[in-house]
Image (cartoon, rainbow, N blue to C red; front, side, top):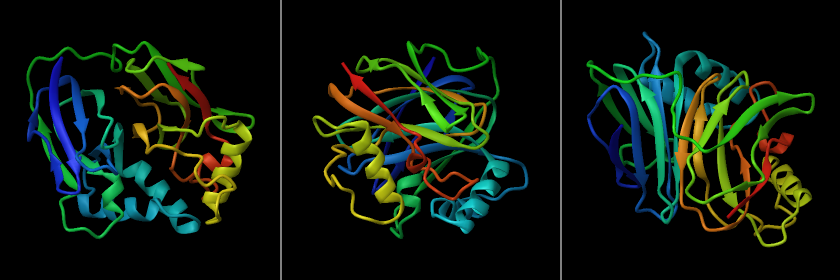
Length: 264
């Protein structure tokens, strides 16, 4: 397996210009305490990067405009996951890559107005490669599924810190699975109230409920999977998403798409 080191922060994205085909592991880190949300995208033929980025910005909003942009994104490219990292917690991200052109996009900074580059384009060359049906090597998994109550996560109650974690999207739109540390003693009702408040611009009842930035896998297109691993400190975490549901225009998290897990 080929391994590549990547840095993503306010200075831009430092990454290779060429990658070998097959299974690739990207070790992503950030020098910025705020971290980065580094996603990998392969655009469909005829879609420009400029158009995609414009629609991506609108999709991270709320309401009818976000719904429309979110639906458009699903048809403009394939989201292959990626790494949400903080300044203190790097992430190893593994994906199978076939020959072509790809873009690393810092979702966190694409929404801002800073001058630093927010996209890094690279090519995957031709040549022999061991290709499989999906990334391998995971010991545990997080699966995004539709249920009678709405989109939900299937996830183990306990996850060993640093274990490779396969994230699979079985929904009908792109979505992510990131982990954030919780305040000691946090309950499921606290998490529910937190996201209900955040989604409507209100102050959460427990403002300091979330104790760490997102770490994990940024958006995957439907039917896609990726493997991520991170040495998270032991404790209680919430697995969730900041993506907008393109059926309702609301945050998936505010619709109950979250799960509490313990990192051991």
